[in-house]
Length: 452
Ligand SMILES: Cc1ncc(COP(=O)(O)O)c(C=O)c1O
Image (cartoon, rainbow, N blue to C red; front, side):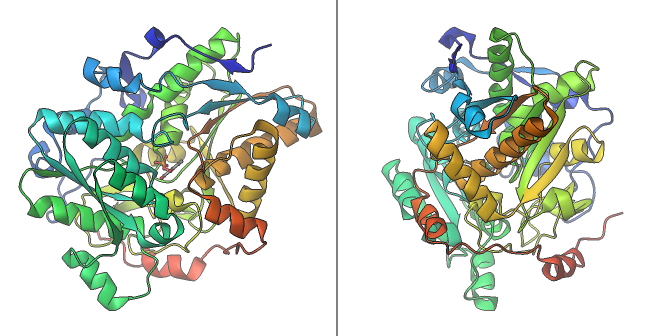
C-alpha cells in the first residue's frame, strides 16, 4: 500500500493539454474594451508575447512544452500524488482520498508551472521586465523566481490586505530580485484614483491588475503577465492533472470526484481539465468535478455569466465569465488568492455547460479543515488550498454516510508557511465569517459594461 505515488522525472508531460479542442461549443471571444469588437492578436501584442497570444487562441489538443521550460520544471516536477490514509482513518470513511501536492515548488505553490513558461516566452521576444499583480503573494513570488532564472526584472503590485497579512511573501520576492509594492499604490494613475476615493481600501486583485497593466503599457520592453484566468495560464497548469492521471493509473484507479479551489481558476483547471476532457469526449461521464470558492467572494455560485472587465479601471479586454462586477471589492478574507470578482472564461463556460459544479464555504470551516489536515497528514496548507481540503473532507464524510467507496482527488495547491498570522487569528477565535455581501454585489453588477 503506497502513500506517495511518484513518477520518474522522464515521465513529466512533454505537452500541455488544451481543453479548447474538446469544448462542446467555442468560447465567447474576448472583446476590445474600447470598440466592443473581438480582440485581435495585434491588440494584445502591446502587453503579451506573440506565442502566449497564439496559445490563448489555440484550438489544437496538445501544445509541446519547450525543453528549456521542462528543464526548469524538473526542479520540482513531477510532483507527488499522496493517498491521505491518516485523514481517511480519522474521518472513518470508506472513500479513498488522493491529493496532488503542488507545495513542493520553490515558491510553494502551483503558480511557477505557468510563471516559468510565461517568463521564457517573454525573454524569447526580448522583454526585460514584467509587471504583474498578486493576491496571496504566491503568484508574485513565482514570477519573481521565474524572471530571475531568465535574467529579467519584475514589478509586483500586491493587494494591500495580503501585503499586510504576509510580509514575508514580499521578502521572498525581494530575495528573487523583484520589486513589490502594496496596491493601490501611488505609482500608477489607477492606484492614485482608488487611494483618493477610498484611502482605507484593503485593495483587490481587480485594482492591482489595473496598476500592472498600466505599468506595462507605459514602459518600453515591459510586458504584463497574469497568474490565472487566461486560457494560456490554465493550459500551462495542466501538467498537474496529466501527471495525476498517470499516477492514479499506477494505482489502477480513476477519480469519481475531482476537487480544486477556485480564485481565477488556474489550479482547478490544471488538475481538472484533463479529467473534464475525458468526460467531454464521452469517457467517464459520471466524474463529479467541483470548484470551491469562499462565501465572501462567490463568483461561480452567485455571480452573473456575462461580459465584464478583468480589472477595476476597465483596461483589460471584456471576458465572458461569471462575475460579481469589476468594482466589487471582496471582504479581506485570509485566502487572498480567492478574492477575485471574475473567473477563467474556460471554467465559466464549463460551469455554464454543466460539465462541473461549484460550492462555497465560510473561512472558519475552511480553517477547521486545514487544522484537521495538518494534524493527520502533517502539511500546513495555504488558506486557498484549504478550501479544496474542506470539500474533500465533506465528500469523504458523505461516503461514510452512504457507505460508498468513492475515489476523491483534490489539488493541494500550496503550502501555508507564510500564512501563520492567519492561523494565529483562527486559533485565537478571532477570524470573522462574512455573510454573502449581497448588497455590494448588487451594486457592482449594476455597473457591468453594456455589450452588443
Ligand atoms: C496556493 C494557492 N492556491 C490557489 C490560488 C487561487 O488561484 P487560482 O484559482 O488561479 O489557482 C492561489 C492564488 O494566489 C494560491 O496562492
